[in-house]
Length: 294
Image 1 (cartoon, helix red, strand yellow):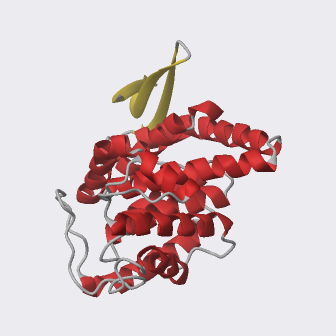
Image 2 (cartoon, helix red, strand yellow; image 1 turned 180 degrees about the horizontal axis):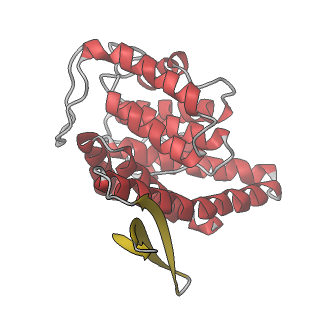
């Protein structure tokens, strides 16, 4: 909790923001000086202050995750690395497809993608899109190209060319809605300009923002534009992992069971126009999912 405090020095009153938090059974305090007067935008300053405190707290944990992950990879036989990557691919494909309505179970997905066993009595489109997602995933982790509109259109085309040829690899030209969400995506006439601005933003900030925060922003900003008729969530989660993988951080799978929390964080960020809501959700879950490296 952030509180406004005053200090009297030589008869003058000075204002500060203070935040106390417990860490390792010890109470720590952070404060920031405001001046002799309370600023008009005090609520905004409180929010910025608490966001900065959390980022500083998380930074060391995330760097420890990266360090331990790198050490583990360095000592790991190639065959085990490949097996671990395949296991992640299967779980990631299952979850990212299931979040979007796929009927395949985790066992169905594993049998299909690892053993080539096609599940019976399941929609053919669910099967084809899982197989296509595997292709795009491996293309993503091997990709040496810069993140660009051309690359994203290619991934989208591969993902949907066997199931939705009419939209595969194309920016939408119609209005879309997100079922159950209060957020309305931009109109189709705005899409090309917004997606162009997105890639300019990425190019200008990819070296300035911490990679884990960058991954969360890439996901949020891209899915908020909603540039495709379908597959925006799947492509944005691939882009998120592209950023993490390129920067040698462990990738992230968002479990299907965690979808409500995930959807709520996205929607709140979008409707309140506050990136930090989703960033905080993302980093907390990133640390949770990678606790074995912490």
